[in-house]
Structure formats: structure tokens, C-alpha cells
Length: 487
Image (cartoon, rainbow, N blue to C red):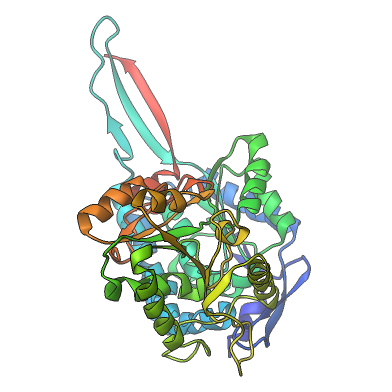
């Protein structure tokens, strides 16, 4: 049972909670199909009010003129509050987006607190080069001295997806606030209740009125927030189609845009790799959060000599993978977000099979479960150019490709309009050499490591523009001003 007051007032404008003026929206629990709450989306008028509040607060300096230490203290208080309400937030994530409770307690709600503490540290440290960088004097006939000032970019529209509702807020809002920006947050309506819970904590932490505003809205609200002349920057995570609309809306006023637009990421298992070590993590990487993650590695490349052994292990792993009630501690795979999304994925699977694809493991809907569940699925006999090998499904579905040479594996891995993430398994030296050849922003070698806020998440090709997190992502929220005078 969620807190029913979360749906009463879902817009936060200039420090005041209010009801949306847009159409009604019903939040549905993916694990059961039951209605959670009905509330009203924000209207375009409220998008304008949110931008006006952010503009006022930024121009007045309510936040940006605080010292870095003062901003950092508020961000650390917010991290403390996220930790205080950790279990309550985790259960809200389970209810609203269907993530298994084990994932909800870690990547969904514990990691955001880590990210806000990192952002607090960055506020104190400043962007690369510092808030004020003194350059070496210019010599010669025109002697001069110069300083580079790095200043917050201004009003930021932050548009976040449903799949990791609080963590994605931390990726965008935490560094923006650390830099001194004012923010209008537009979450996916599918993650709006989690966003309301987060904004309540931000208010309690002491974020000044107008500095952080919330407007869960429809595409018309998003278009307004991306085109509004008083907005200086848009940061967005979502699909290519919506990303293109964001760029189009932002173009007339030449706004800065940072876009993370998804992936169709490969797992490359090199010849002779330790399959006992590689198979289970490779399966989990496309099943985590029911495959609803931009970095899910959904194209698996295996050498011909290892293909049978890989499939034997993969079938064993998938058969034992707990699928079901996301509140159950043992569950690894929960539901997809909506019935419509599951039907879309099933359409891809049906078309692939009609074209000659083979279901190697899994597939279908699990028996005896309400909600929007889909069994994890491995497909074979798929051509690398087929739609199911090219389109991001956001589901626990992966295709297996058998290769004969490493060059062939690299070519298939790079045969994608996306370039966001990858896994490589094998001899460390060989794996690093192959990783360097992959056209992607991140490569985990032999399992990689844990989530790190201090490194950027960036995509090549159509996976996006700009970066989230890390020092490079923090730098996205600044402008650079050059001051120069005669020596």
C-alpha cells in the first residue's frame, strides 16, 4: 500500500504543492495490474509557471550565489533523508515500476544517496579547472592576463524515464544543483509518484523555492519545457524518437542539450573464455529490471567452438531464474511496466519467429501470475540486421550470434546505430584489445565493477549527445567566461 497523499498534489511550483491542470492519469502496479492512484498531469500553464519560478530563483541568485560549501551541505542533508526513508522508497519503486525489491533497495534507492554525496563533493571541489582558473600570462607584443570563470549554465529542464525513477533524478538533478543551476524536473508519468516522494525530501532538505520544480506532464508539457526561451539547457534520457523531438524543440533558441537515447549493447564472449564465470552475469545483464535499462546487453556473441556449452549453461541459468512477485526477496525478474509494452515486445518476438528465429530458451508468459510478466528469452537464428537485433526492446530478451573469428564478432557488435554499453569476457589482455575496438561509451571487461558516480555515462553514435555523471557530466552544467586585460 502506497502513501495515498502522494497522488493528491503532484506538481511542485516555486515551493508550493498543487494539483495538475492537465488530463487525469492512472498509475497501475505492474506486478498485479491493480490501480495504485489516479491523479492529474501538469498542464502547459504549469510548465510555464515552473520555468518562471526557476528563472526567478536563478536570476535572483537564491541558490547559485550560495557558497559551494553551503550548497554541498544541503545536498548531503538530502542524501541523509534518502537513507532515512530508504525502505519506504524501495517499496514505492516496487509498487510503481515493478523492480524486484532487491534491486529497489540497491540501484534504485541506495545509489541515489551515493550520487548526491558525490555531487556535494563536486560542488566543493568545482568543475575541472575550478570555478576560477588563472591562465599563464600572454607574452610578446600583446601582453595580457586571463581568467576563466566557470558559471552555472542557468535554468535546466531535466526529463527522466520511468525505469530508474529516483536514480535518474540523481543523475540529472544532483549535478545541476551542485553547479548552482535551477531545475524544472519532468519525470515520466509512470514514475511520477516516486518523483513526488523525492521532491518532498528535497523540500525537507532545504532546497529554496523555485530552485527545483516538478511537473509530471504529457508530450505537450515536454515540448514547452524544451522550447521555452527562458530555459538554458535540456537534459533527457529516453528514446531516439523523443530525443529527436527534444533537439528539434530546443534548436530555435540554441539550447544546450544532453541526451542519453538508449542502446542495443553487445556481450562478446571471446574464444576460450571461462564460461562458468561468464554465463550467469551475461544473462543477468539483460534480465535486470526485466531488461528495462538502456545499458542492457541484449546481443550475445559466442565463438562457434563454445556455442553448445554456452547454451547448455544459459538454459540452466534461465530455468532457475526466479520470475514473479517483485516484493519477494528471491525474485530476480519482475514485470514489464505496462500491458501495452509487453504486447509490443511480444509482437517483436512473434515477427522474429515468423522470419525464422528460434527460441533457444525461455519465452512466453509465466503461468499463474497477474501483472505484466514475460519470461526471459534467448533467440537464435537471427540476422544481425533484423529488427529484433537492431531495436531497443526494453525487455528481458537477447539474441545469440555464433561467430568464427574475433574480427567477425567485433563487426557484428558494432553493427548497431547505438553505442552505449558492452561486456567482453576472455583473457584480460585480449579482452582489453577487443574492448578498445568497440564503438561504445562503456565496456565492462570480465564483469567490470560496481556503479561509480565519478565516471561519465556517455554514448556513441545514436546513443546520445553529451554525458551524465562523472567530472565530464558535471561540467555539462557550466558555461565558461574568459576575462582578459593588459598585463
